[in-house]
Image 1 (cartoon, rainbow, N blue to C red):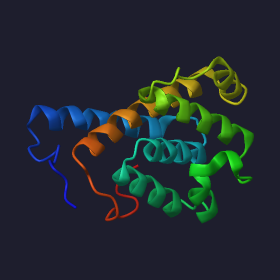
Image 2: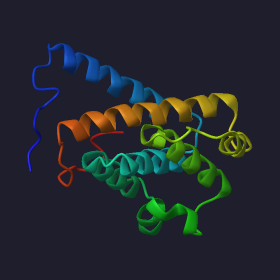
Image 3: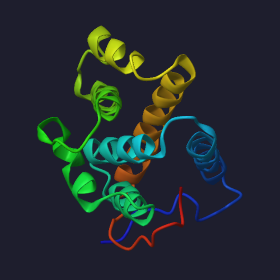
Image 4: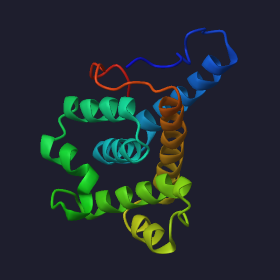
Length: 160
């Protein structure tokens, strides 16, 4: 499988410049947030899985492994509710990420209960970072799915 289109194929093109801004915003969040690194890795991976983005799922699972995340935690993120390997704080972030990613499925969005659970573990700045991270992942996942960016060839550490 090959991608339908390389969004960065013509660097001076409007789409390439705009997509680059998504990357810059994502890097800012990933590098400057006070959220625990494990939470970031779990959230971007789970959001990418929900959105069906093979490329991003490849990127974020490999990056998590490269950063020392355990294979069990990476493998079980899709079934985190039934897994015993996540903290309450990680569960709260994953639940917020799932509801934020499923807005496109005509769900009601993030419920007050889910927000309250997340607020028990994260301050307002961290909650804002989670909201923006999930939103950016939703957007970039959709770009990748639309152009059918294949997963499997990513080398860990190149992104994020």
